[in-house]
Image 1 (tube, rainbow, N blue to C red):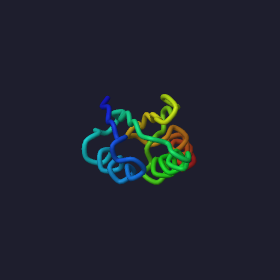
Image 2 (image 1 turned 120 degrees about the horizontal axis):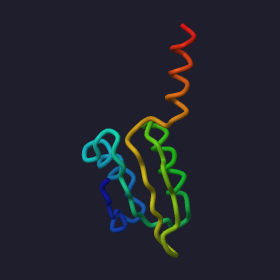
Image 3 (image 1 turned 90 degrees about the horizontal axis):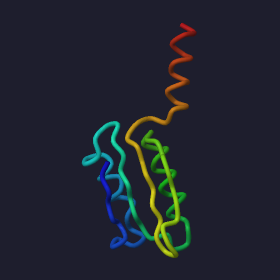
Image 4 (image 1 turned 90 degrees about the vertical axis):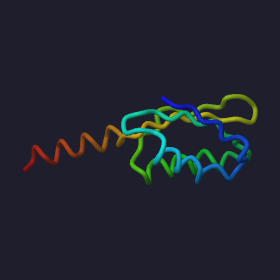
Length: 91
């Protein structure tokens, strides 16, 4: 589990989050990211990034009045794994 403070990047943190998840977080490991929420759109952006990269969003919570924390696991979401198991049993 690794923790990253992306607050200094303000609303320009998503590229760094993806870079860290791809290059610094190992498969099966969790990354904890702290960032500023501003108008709340970054929260949806993070959820979209997690889905696009087939990672698992473990937790998302408001840390204080301006900061948000997300925990992302570098594995496919469980429902995707179940779908693969179902496909394998049908064959």
